[in-house]
Length: 173
Image 1 (cartoon, rainbow, N blue to C red):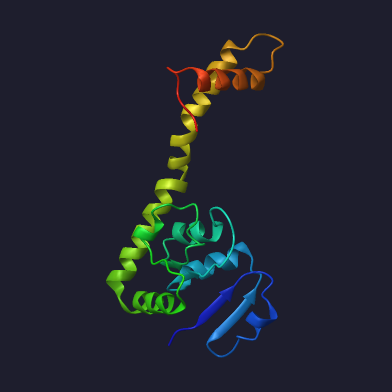
Image 2 (tube, rainbow, N blue to C red):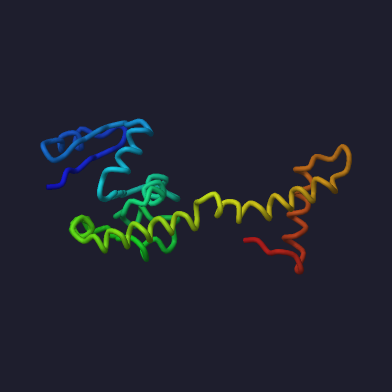
């Protein structure tokens, strides 16, 4: 038997009406309680129907090494995520994916590992350092060259504009 936990702040009356023996509607939970859920549940599901950009709840579930099933909206901004976790907008396909993950330990491990590696490659401290380190080195170099009385931010903006228009410099866009 499986129990469904509907975790999230401000559940609608329609969602609250789903509560029963096998369905628990929590409403808002603290970060500590949410962490306990991540450690104890079998599968995370983010059946998102609207929203924009990267969804924190999706990345958070992946970070915790929990297999995740989501929709195309849930994976927005996360190119390639559908290669490592089940993604569908069809309710039956989502349900089948959840059941498969709950019943197939090999598939569970595969999706959990793939999701964690996906999140680590893009959102870990090491990934952040890889992106930010060259920027910080550039800022440091500009700071060293900054003239007295000229704001460093202004120098950075001038330097960035120069590089955008310099055919030999790094291109942005």
